[in-house]
Length: 200
Image (cartoon, rainbow, N blue to C red):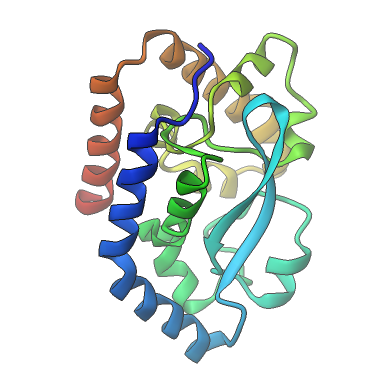
């Protein structure tokens, strides 16, 4: 189950980042114009082997919340999500800067989404096996739980719902996928993710 980020993945991330650079510049400009700096939101997440790394995103929340939030959970109706941020989150464009994480070898194209340390602390011993894989830009659980925000919004205690119900199910799904993964299945996950974003 243990694997490293392949050089081909890092090269592909670099090529895609170059292609997206003009659009990324427009996104950055829209953030600056509507809410001011900073453009990026950097947050420590837990990666392969339990090592932390700085996850990079386009900032989609107000500066106070983006810099001081203690929770990694945000429901779609959160009032601190900026006007541009709503579109960034819905389209997943806020995740584009994570191509830099792939280039640096901290993330993979497909792998379990990296969690905050406060949530990893709840992992049971058998669930910690998910940390043997590099975290990814997308994974099967992201597709299956694409409406996670809506589920959490309906909960009286979103954090408890996530820790007790959603997170364990996502981990089980990713552990299953890790045992059966192939380069072809990874491509299928990426295509399914893109299709979901384009088709809704």
